[in-house]
Structure formats: C-alpha cells, structure tokens
Image 1 (cartoon, rainbow, N blue to C red):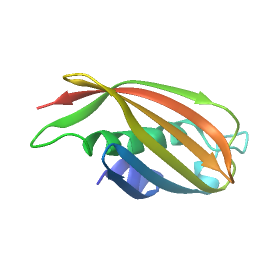
Image 2: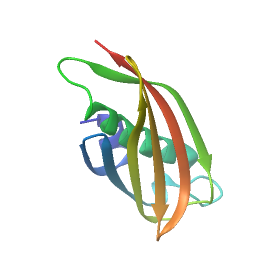
Image 3: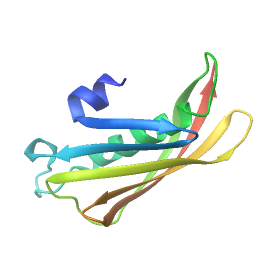
Image 4: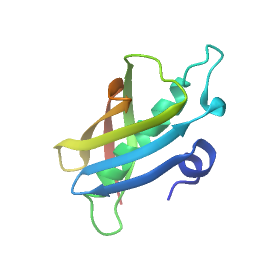
Length: 121
C-alpha cells in the first residue's frame, strides 16, 4: 500500500473502514534514536499512515487525499516492542477532513496526533 511506511519503516496490518483505521509496528533497534527510544519520525509516520488510511476509507471514486497539516504530541517515549495506532476521521468539510490518532504501547498512550487532509481529484 505504502512502500515507505510498509517496507522502510515496517508499519504492518493496516486496516480501515468507515473512517476508522488501525495499524501496528514492531519497534526494534533500527527504530530507536540516540537516546534509545523510538524516534519521533517513526511515530509521526505511524500516525500519518493510519490517519491516511482512515481518510481514504471515507472518499470515493478516483479522489485521493493528502496530508496538509500534522500535529504530533509526544506524551512519553516508546521502547522496542509492539506499537498500536488507532485513527478516526472527525470533522469533514467539502474538501477538507480532520483526523485524530493515538499510539499506545503496553496499554499506555505514547502519542496523540491531529491532522488535516485535503481531498484531491
């Protein structure tokens, strides 16, 4: 689906329907920063991938979607292990959608994210 997110970063099991999406990432040493925690760019990629899937599940035909704004709040550092992201589409305008996502590890929130997507055709 997304060679960068799937092959390079390792995002797995992306599922989406009716404006909701989930995905997983098994964080390993290759995902860590110099402090030994999951790199912020990996977490941003994870939420953007899930939110994009949630948005695409709401649009039809040949339309696409592009992230126009992404805000990521890093609540606590991630460690090697399973990360889970859940995303859902919130407000929708004619050509703009707002989506939210949360990343959890071992039942604890790591990230809260908010993004705006433009519907393209």
